[in-house]
Length: 94
Image (cartoon, rainbow, N blue to C red; front, side):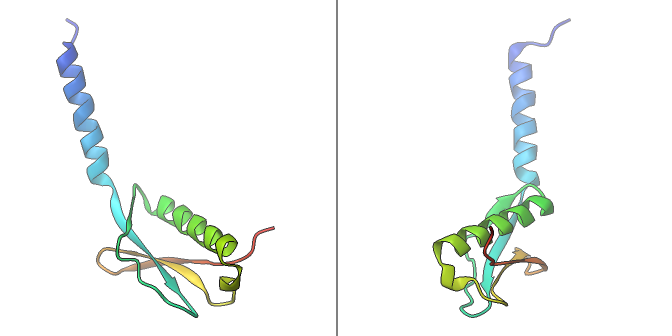
């Protein structure tokens, strides 16, 4: 017997909801010369993607504000409990 269309939609909705709930909130703080704390955060489905997002933020910041490219200036990744995971240096890319 084939599942009814509403059963399929309901199952798909539950999968999407589970995936949404599985995302974690990460914060991307600016550290170094002019520190700034991220108060908004960003949902990432994994720690790997949080690291990729931190690298993207650092790269965009380096392009938008070349003066921020200095040793020690980084994007620090932390979770909502304050646990620090890693840093992405703000550096010029060729």
